[in-house]
Structure formats: C-alpha cells, structure tokens
Length: 278
Image 1 (cartoon, rainbow, N blue to C red):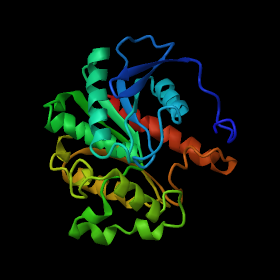
Image 2 (image 1 turned 120 degrees about the horizontal axis):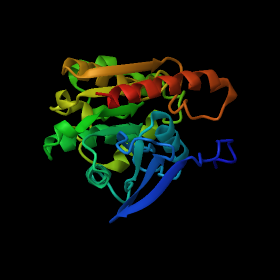
Image 3 (image 1 turned 90 degrees about the vertical axis):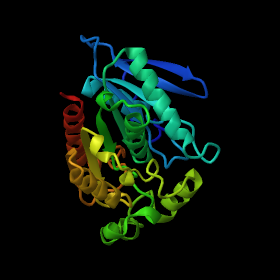
C-alpha cells in the first residue's frame, strides 16, 4: 500500500526492535545517531477507530517521530475490536507504558496518539495517574485529532458546541456512520471516563497536553471540547487548529497538501518538544 500511494520508504537511520509482551507486541524506535543515552521516551498509539490499524501501517510515522523529535518511541500493537473489546486495548497500552518505563529506565513518559490512538494516549496517561499513582512520571499527552467523547455522553452544557459529526459527515473518511459503528464495535459504556476521556475527573492531573484539530473532521469538536475542559481544569494546553482540513490530512500523499503538511509537521514537533521539555 505504501508503495502504491507513494509513501517514502522507511528511514534506515532509525534502529527498531519488535518485542512481544504476552498477547501483544510493541516496536521500539531509536535514532542511531543519538548522543544521549537518556533520550525522552514516548509511547505512541496508532489510529484506526479501535478496530483497524497497526504498528506496521504507521511504521513510517513512528520513524519520523523518533528522528525529528529525537525521542525513543515505543509504538504499541494493542489488540483490536471486535475480537478484543474495551478495555483490552487500553489495558494493553498501560502494560506497554509500564514496560517501557522499566525497560529503558526512564523517569518520565509522554503518551502520544492519533485519532482513536489519541483516545488511548489520554486513557493510558489517566490510568497511570489514577490507578497506579504515577502522576510524577506522566510528562504529558500529544493527541492528534483525538476521539475524546462518545456522542451519547457529551455533557448537556456542551452539546450546543458538538455539531461536527453532522456538519462534517461528508468531508472526511471517518464519517458519522463510520465513527458510530466503530465506537459500537469497540464496546464499553459511553459514560465510562476511560472511553469518554473528556469526562475523566482527574484531567487536571495532566501536566501538559498538545492537541490538534482538523476543521473538516467529524472529530473536530472532540478536540475543541477537550481543549476547553483541560483549560478549565488548569492544565497547560498547546492547541493547533487547521480549518478546512480533514482527518489525517497530514499523512495523505497529495501534492496539493504539501504546504499544509509542512506547517502541520513543523507545529507538531514544536508541540512534542513543548510537552516533553521540563
């Protein structure tokens, strides 16, 4: 697929290793020219609506993250619905994060993800904080066009600002019907704060969060509501909005998107560095 659509070949300057952790696996990425043995550690969750996607499909993106952010990246091959429903993928993510901290002897970790992976980045970070008492070790979250709330669980006082499922239904690959189908397949109760992370009572314990919004995306308002809720909770937030662009626009191999992608990637790495810095 990558060759068919003109994606660049994998960057050979990144050292990778696949590690099996029981029922799932992770792939680690380390810049081979890294001079600092104590590289910042990021755990990345791929997108795919909780039902598809893989470490392999986002291998090129993980390599780019590692090289350009100068981070050690652990990409998580969490188990997918419908065979493995919520909270299996979330629990896999927590296990991967704990393994990564121990394996690399890191003091802190940045949780990163795209779309449904952004949901897992929030969920894993919050679970490390709430269930495992690891607030001091969660550096922050990087969430690109994330899923943050089930449409049925949007708080009453925020529903007026939650219209993108209908407004952007025809403009993006993750249409309203697709999103609802994927969420239904994933399972869980809409109001569960580890599914609808927007509702989590401990959002305020996150230190820094970088979020992007795609303006022509059904998930546009997921990002907006999360930004508002984080800021209301006193969290430091860096937010980049891209009006008129659809879901995953930063990865489409399309010449007309080249300038947008240059801006997006530049801003993204600034956001990552901001979250990962002291």
